[in-house]
Figure 1: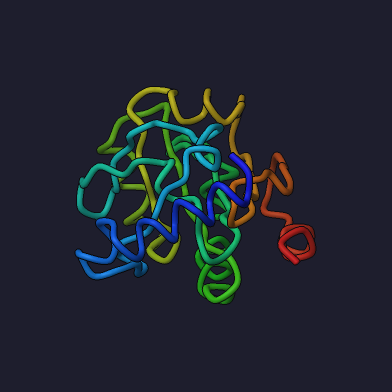
Figure 2 (figure 1 turned 30 degrees about the horizontal axis):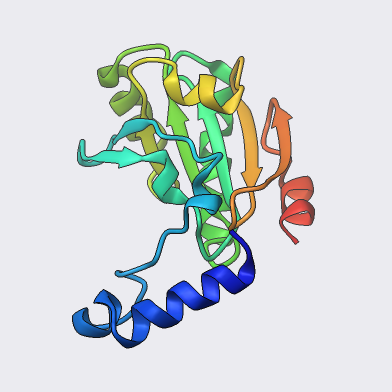
Amino acid sequence: YDDDDLERAMAALSLDGSLGREGGLSAERPVLVDRFLEGAIEVDVDAIADGKDVDLAALVPSKTPLLLWAWAPHCPICAGEAPGVQDFAEANTDSISVVGIGTQDSLGEAEDFVATYGVETPQMLWDPGFDSWQSLGITGQPTWVLVSPTGEELGRWQGGLPEEEVLAAAG
């Protein structure tokens, strides 16, 4: 695809096509263009708060950069930094979305971790296997992956949350 192809397709959809007949575009009615999804991560995980399925590919594109936190319930570094992650996510909600992706132990242990450390602001997800981590190239925890609103990796770190580096990379 090129930009001219996209403009022609959008014009056709907007005027006489389904977008014109069904109410147009909105945040609830986006148009997904295949070329932006070619590298998308198609992994379903569960939201710890309510158990609903979440597709990682649906997190991008977004309005802000996305900071993924790979954590595990048994990880002492993750436990030690959880309150700071909560504080960081709350302080930067307008500029960065923080999402935690846990795996390795059980869902019950993940629920206990979230409750014990009061981690609410980052969206906390649970992957019963390692699909999410494998697709992201994560080999240990904690790992941080910063992704641009269009899905480009902006940075990757292991260990404690490098707040200043994340903020600088996010721009």
